Amino acid sequence: AQVLYPISFNEGNLMATAFLTWTTCGAALFENDLTNAVARLRETNELNSQIGAASMTSHEQYLLIAAGSLDVEDSQLQWDGSLLNESALGRSQAEHHARLGQPSRALVHAVAALQTEVEQGAWRHAAYTIDCCARILINEGDTSLGLDLFAAVDRFRATRSLSTAPALIALRPDLATARTPQRFGDLPAAARHLLEHLPRLLAQGATQNRTIAWDLLTPTEFAVTSLVATGDTNREVADKLFVSAETVKSHLSRVFAKTGMKNRRELMLQFAEDMPTSDSPRDS
Image 1 (tube, rainbow, N blue to C red):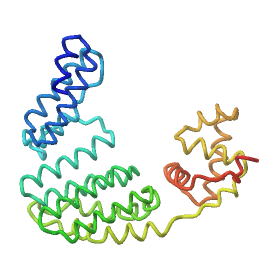
Image 2 (cartoon, rainbow, N blue to C red):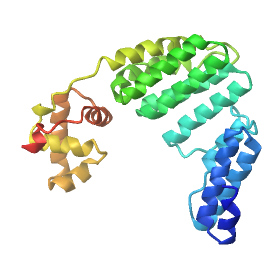
Image 3 (tube, rainbow, N blue to C red):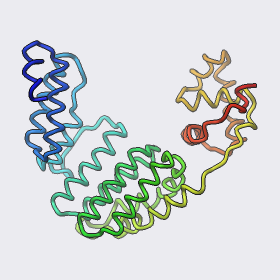
Image 4 (cartoon, rainbow, N blue to C red):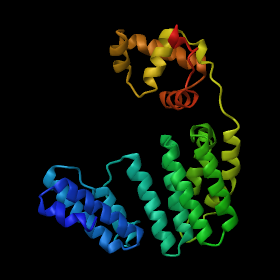
């Protein structure tokens, strides 16, 4: 990137230059050169603004937090509300406090990120956060629990994450408790208790896959389900099937009744997990 940067800059290729600057930012982060990383990121933002590309404002804030330039408790940061921002912020805060030798605060922030990810069904991000918790514990000398978490998250990924989702969903009350200790300085006993039981819960989740009889659905109900599973709204489904939105709503109600599922998110997760085979009603 350092070799190509002056070439692309001199040729006026701002898009390539911005990409190369972003690459050097990543290299600086890898070497823990946070000051240089922030400088390169700001340069990336300036180049992006010239070519009309989106800036990396939120990521810049994460880096400033990691570099200790902002007080993560008191700063009035503006987020765009996306899951990526919320969970990435939590992990950045966790890693920042871990570097400062504050494992209790680090774990609380990591658990807060995990709660956000579980609430939104973002299992891939949840796996990153569990990795983060494992590293914090190992760095603090709790090697046994850290390795158990690493093993658990490997199983979590090996089962495409979705089969263990019920185990994480069941943790919602514990996550809410674990992220709010009375004092940050105290060892978050609730957070530690949760992490100690997480490997067992994930292992149980992997063996308790839910079986849905998709063949009970009529061809039309299956068609509605497959479209809803891609994220389509009722109106979008109606347009594609040449029916009214009310008809789609009625079909969806019958799908929920037949499958025992309660909402669209659960339907999307289970449908993606099961991947119905060729002898499903859609081929009728």
